[in-house]
Amino acid sequence: MSAADHIPDAALAVGAKTTSGMTYGGSAVAVWGGLTMNELGIIIGIVSSVAGLIGGLCIQWYWKRRHYLLAREKLELLKRGGADDE
Image 1 (cartoon, rainbow, N blue to C red):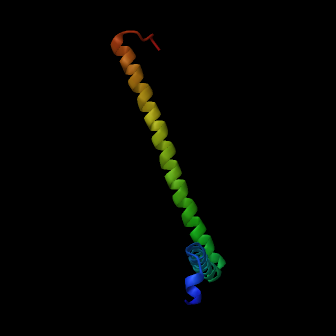
Image 2 (cartoon, rainbow, N blue to C red):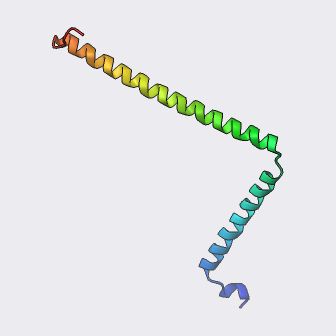
Image 3 (cartoon, rainbow, N blue to C red):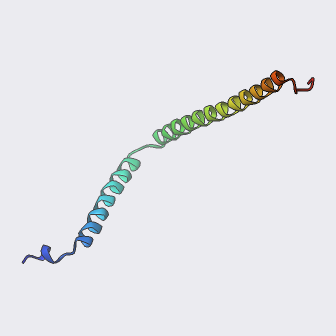
């Protein structure tokens, strides 16, 4: 029997996860370390502007939907004749 036959499968799985994490972590550090301050600023600016755009669209959709539902509710009240003159 070789030495590899005595290593439990759980230990091999932990080792595989550890080396995988080290590989991805090392590549992330290499990419991050290779960027200048200008490049980091551009990346952060792009990410924040896209997040702001998505957030703004979500907020706009929410308020327009709310306005639509209130207008629809008011129209239903007017159709039933139960609305006061506002």
